[in-house]
Image 1 (cartoon, rainbow, N blue to C red):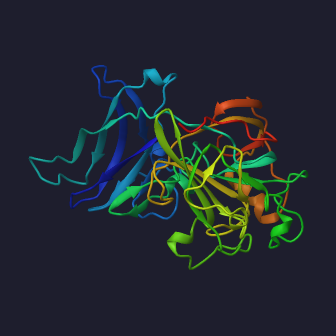
Image 2 (cartoon, rainbow, N blue to C red; image 1 turned 120 degrees about the vertical axis):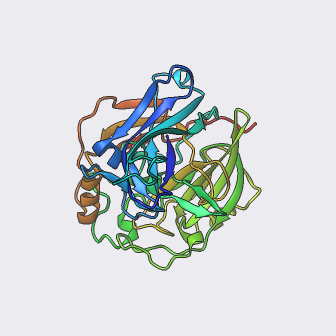
Image 3 (tube, one colour; image 1 turned 45 degrees about the horizontal axis):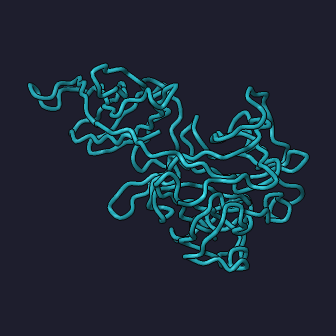
Length: 364
């Protein structure tokens, strides 16, 4: 998963006809081609608030505008991926921007990128028990997490590229019972959050108040968006990673006496699930990243040591309907139900995590 930024420096609008990810080696193999509605579902103009959706409308970039193409290039085995990729872009202008130099229809190959060799860390689930919903997660749609690009320190970041919001349903399949604005009516509220790896705390924030469920917060400073949180630094296979546990319950971090520089072990309690910061329902926001700043880092993939896939929700719309009305979450039959090891859960999965966190790699 990666993103390609396109900028139109011409004085005319450009219609993007297709974008291909191509092996930079001699084979020139096309690994992924985006065009038509598929391209529309994977393209977003810079600054666009809404997330991309499949559409028959042509993808267009206006003069001096920039846009982002979201690529998910895959291969059966990692060894089959090339070391480098280039991109073949086909576009059209309403007329030649520079007659004799730049024609009305252009096909160019550019944008060479190296395929990362960084290992994927394997960590313990930060939660325990049944009924956890993987929401706003990877990878079938460009949702709020992956679609959110931050501009900080003169750089572009996608810190939530692989982030997940873990919400919980009760035994009747509902996200809450009774009045939705009462935090204690939500089963996730107050659930213990555990360290996913052995490492060192680099940030421990507390003191932010709980938000009212199903009501969008307003006026939050950017630094308060993650709410009460713990950021932990850990190492695997000679590489350094950071993991954030966000929106924690008010007072739950402070009660444990957590502080920067403190060593923690996998499975150690770090706080409780809350509804602080930019949150509209009690949940745990979980993300692995390449730096300690929650909004000025790039999100990295990870795998959980163990989880049980029990079902899957049919769509994001069905999930939102359940949360807005307090009705049982709809489920759809799936292949692959059962225990999974060293894998990343996917968006809309319904999960059970081990009662005790499975052991993760020790810091080295």
